[in-house]
Length: 425
Image (cartoon, rainbow, N blue to C red; front, side, top):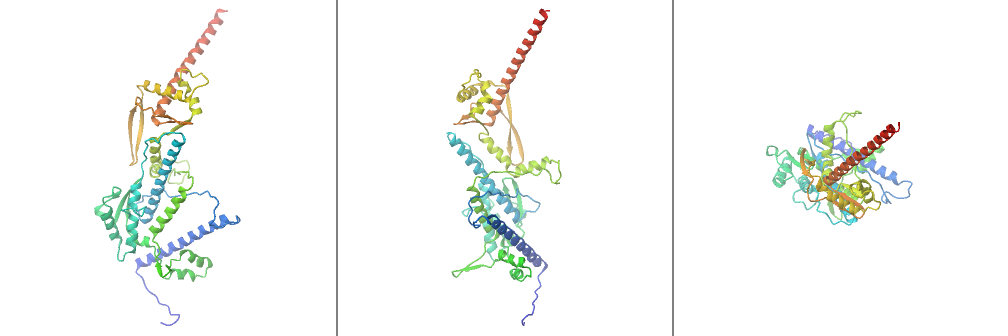
């Protein structure tokens, strides 16, 4: 070959399509990182600080909901992994908030345990010491010479078959595996898992960017350059997709844990993007996959109904015999209510227990259980759900009795007035 000669090399169709998809992903990655850099710089311009120095911030974290498509690949596993991590973080945050309020109100730590999904995170490989770890296994197979998607899937079956969250399907053991997430079972097709995880650019792609006549396209190469670094004679290979994703996710959770998070779940009313249309099946599915039902279960296991002492007195003082007195102590009121609870012997309350595997099981519980389920704190009265229903029932009976008594007095008054008028004629 002489200078300026062009050497052309033909690729099979499958290889050409993979190179093309890698090129498109590189463009998307460069644009995404470019926009993040621009946005971060715009927030700090004119404030006299660099993007690294942040005095205070309000962040909005928008994440995908749980995904279970007809065909699930590495992308869906990453999304569901992220949901599992933040579902775990949400559970721990709520439990921590409960503990803090109990301590603030001077209560002993009550025997309330909340379910978690630590076993799912163990299976996926959230911690480095996890003995299972789908993602660590994926990283090791991505680096090994001669590994295939089938060998990766077979290694998972050999390593994780006994894990209760791992779904085994021997008929498809070489092409798929299943994970029993908190929102349900998801089957993942291992086709192209290793290639997507390596995320390697074809040779010459960076040069192609840098030789572009468009300045913006040339600048994108600064955000997608994947050349390995050499430091002190050691060669550092770039991290694969799963390793980078796990590292960034850990940084994000650490940042969220250092803040005071507030949670908001957005529900899509229908799949047609049309107004005044409410798809109840779709809504229930979202409530299950978002973990909202688990939040309800968590609330029911504790004391979901809470009143300030003053509010509790105003609402329930009618249940005391001397309710017209001005100085009524909250503790005396609670004691009087507890003494009245066993008197309601005939009424039974229908409660509903939610099974997160898409089942609802009604159960009945008697009102005459010994545990009152009412606890007085320094400033708040705590009531369990069933006890709150009992107290509300007593309040309704009292109001019904008082309203009947009031009607009787009014009717007697009107009748006496009518008779008095008749006798004076």
